[in-house]
Image (cartoon, rainbow, N blue to C red; front, top):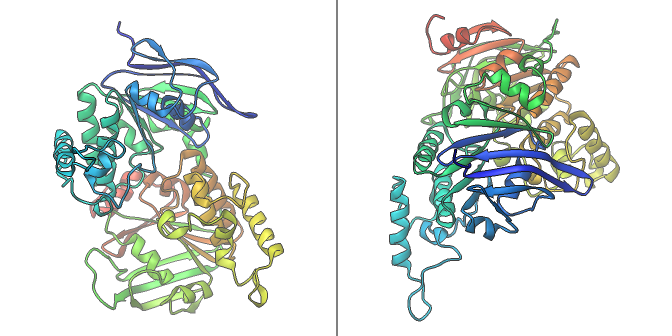
Length: 505
């Protein structure tokens, strides 16, 4: 039997008093797409850094084609045929595609001048090899995220062509871009390239992976087939069954916080692709989590953004009431005055200031409260930050580091904590666990249920049907901007999907 293309045996890695890897075994075959799953802190990144030459193991061995190798730096890893594409793509937006592909290895003419035509010709060949029609002269800044991801793959393969490690490659891609990326990955694997695919998106695994390794607490929790039940993957990831991720639903609810009756949002100017609320009737009560389901384009995000005054310009018609009083929700100021808070589906784009410290991000929504007479009170700021760290278990507990340095799950906790500091009565959530690993999802669900138990009303839009069914007390189904059905939490998924698609279950 042939030796694996790549193998790791007994890998141990310590950082001070923290043991990141505890005797990890991992292997990759030529032509295989091997999914590597795990929560934040499970050891995935450390293992990837060992293979990339960023760190060296304290104990254990790395082999390529059965022969031991010592990868003391990234150049040695590349020389051994290993290339890594990190989540933050190693591309320069202000340069064109060809310049990025040859960055640091430029083709030169006699006399020390760049041979731009030659680089563009060679870049075109490499792009066409994976059937990608991109002009090498285009600036990377003008490409979509999906196109940039593929350019990063071509660049990585130009350094090394045997092992490709991909860290969360689909995190920022659309559904169509994900399918395009998977098609390219399959073609690369068919040529003998071994691919390590690191992801937290369990639903993608069956469609791309040949094998799955799950890590937990610095160890391999299990190796399984890609079509293993999602419940089994969750059990390996977090050490407990899937149904334990969702806290018990509310047994009772209080007074009505939000009431919409035949409510429509009339746009000041029509916008293609934006589905405004159109004759919606629904309620959210104290202590209740209400879900919004619907296929893409049903109007879930538009409903939330219109309620918060953060969408396109327009005005509400019909009855819109908060705590029994009619309200004019035509701006963010009006929504916040009515006790409404909103967590966007794009935390990195509009929910956080990534280069700013965690503490400052947390207090931005209550800046007036902690700044009497226009001067920031360090004591009040520290109290607010401490409250958020305690409520949401944000890690690391360091208010001074940039929020962009946190994991996706902890960034999402900061976004939620920031809004809760404003003491809202109604919380609007759009895709509250997008880009969050399974363990952090469970923590967020528990915190949302605890907030609801304190009387908060929550209206949540999600494209993850298990999330809506497991978390929500009621689910309202939208189609073309209207509510077309309503179900109790725990309803069968097919029933909700049938209503969303306009057919009988």
